[in-house]
Length: 314
Image (cartoon, rainbow, N blue to C red; front, side):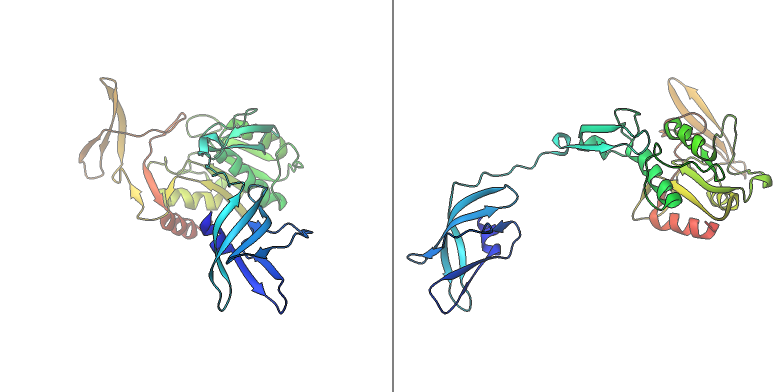
């Protein structure tokens, strides 16, 4: 608190014996309309009423003069009543309210650490996560020029879109708003992004790929290029992937060619035969949720991801 006043307070003197109190820190002010005068006594400045904005409390303050030239400077000597120390709440105890942009449900008193968790189910109505709501925020902002909840977005069946193995919680309402379908790698309607038929090129106003590209086993550049070919001129891609802001792009299994999973003793291994016939076995595999090929095969870096997208023409 002493540092707060030392930074915040200045005293400017005029020709008379009256003094004007000036607060340069917006956290500390003299309440407007206050007619109670401050006064000096024994090198002390007495302030009858000071408002501490973050707390919304008023106090009497005594400041000790430490310098007089070229301007008065002070240190806080007394605050009455004393200012209670504010202890920041840990994230798990902070609470927020929000309206879900997928289902339109109002959520009240939700833990902040739950809301800001990328994958945690934080909407009490539809179970959406921050990532899912972020996808819809980006999509509606691009289509309508502003972020809208799917429950209030106007339908436009002439817009064609496709998704890749994404959450049915927003895939179903999107299918009612647009000419849209959610595709899958392992079931119908099927889309293998590495083997897209030419009939699909130039057909879509938007594509959504949320946490899919880190699972494409090989030829990630080709996958991005195929998405670019699927888009109409002026079409756009809503993309999410795990990535690191710094460092290099990492391919965990760079020589994948002929591969299969082997489960034994309660553990799963990846067996791979490279193009030159070398046999490889990998353990400590990381899988993400969902069906199909969900092995985590790469970690993008921010710079490599941008380069891949630019090279693809997206």
